Amino acid sequence: SSGINAEWPLRPGICSDKTGTLTTNQMSVSKMFIVDEVTPDVTKFAQYEISGSTYEPKGSVSHNGRRVQCHAIPELHELAFIQTLCNDSAVDYNETKKVYEKIGEPTEVAMKVLTEKMNPMNLDMSKLSKSQIATATSDAIAEKFKKTATLEFSRDRKSMSVLCTPLDEQTSAKCGLTHGNKMFVKGAPDFVLERCTHIRVKGEKVPMNPAVLRNILDMISLYGTGKDTLRCLALATRDAPPALGSMNLEDSRNFAEYESDLTFVGVVGMLDPPRAEVYDAIERCRKAGIRVIVITGDNKGTAEAI
Image (cartoon, rainbow, N blue to C red):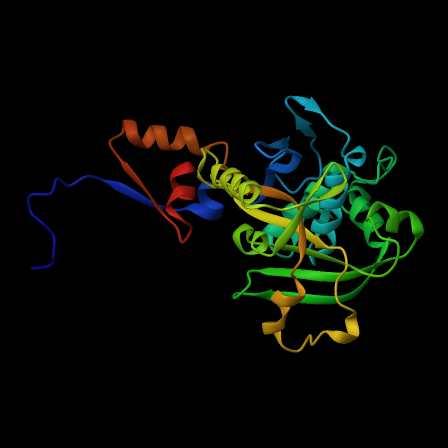
């Protein structure tokens, strides 16, 4: 009468939360990609692997096993600008605990950490303290722009953006601007890509077409359903956004219109990695005949990957 079937074999089990128990609860960007070449028949991607899985801004960016200098690749330079400026989080070095800690949302902190690893400003980090290393690149990027408006995230468009003005000619040139503002956008790939009319390829603005869009979405699907099951965010720009005075920032229903005519720059894939000791612990449970059940509000694919 209680709903328990007497024929079911009784087996000891452990129910475990996933985030923060089986995993480190420290989101980290482990992969990212940009479009490297577009032809009528082929879309080629440049994929990058990022080492390090904590909030410590220590790690490298590599392509096909070789470390890359991100400041020399226009799309990576721009990607770093977007993920840093579309971001209200920070990384802090706790002098007492001797660890790097997050201030803000884990996904945003993961992108701030990636910015430091990428070092797109090519800063000399050798003489900086651990506290300075936590924000050196992000601070340098913030000094290059004046943030004039923020279009906060809304569920209908699943994105957010910032309107920025470059503060010097060199920054304007790197952003492909001769004057005025630039809008940086980040959000759920499907929603951002449906508003992209162009792609950034080797520093140039190339028209988007259905075949390229399909190939980008296929690549994102691989990131989201592979062995790592990465959470993906798309990064884009609007090179000629509306004038600030013409936008109604009090009504978020207008934001998708403002975040249109976008240029796709790239995608970052994040993982909350499993704790190092989890594998052995689960193996010991299995050998002892104890069933381990993961309880999570995350999607099934992510739980299975962990």
